[in-house]
Image (cartoon, rainbow, N blue to C red; front, side):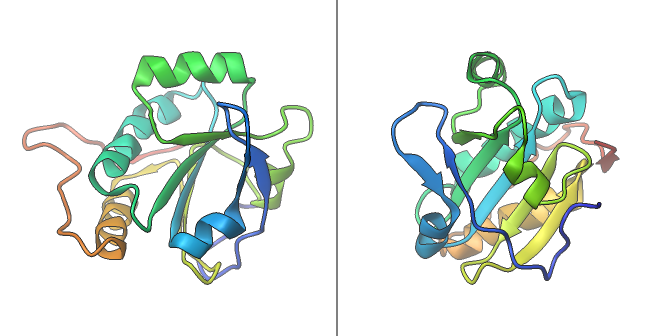
Length: 166
């Protein structure tokens, strides 16, 4: 089964936050505005490449109406080490590492997989692996949702791959 595509309704879910305490609810996050979800595994080289760029979107345009959240397919301890190593500060949730209910509901076959979910629950962008154009589009949507000027996510002279398979 392939990952859910744009135009599909995003499945509702609740998952624990890595910090513990309250659970993250997609429905509650959508009530505030659009949601950028990214599924990842810590051993995935493309995830290691992609997540720092998504962190840039979070630093530039996260908060306000936009929620950016990662969904780890690894145990909490290993995920915390990954977040520290790659400087990830956006919210991270933990999918169950035995049954992967949320990853399965979203039809994941590869990571990273990112979804831009509109307030009405429709998936507007479904991006599997690393697709530079999708990341730029998500950054633009995040700025637009917060009524801000889009901030460049990539630095001049930075060598950025257009595509890397997940």
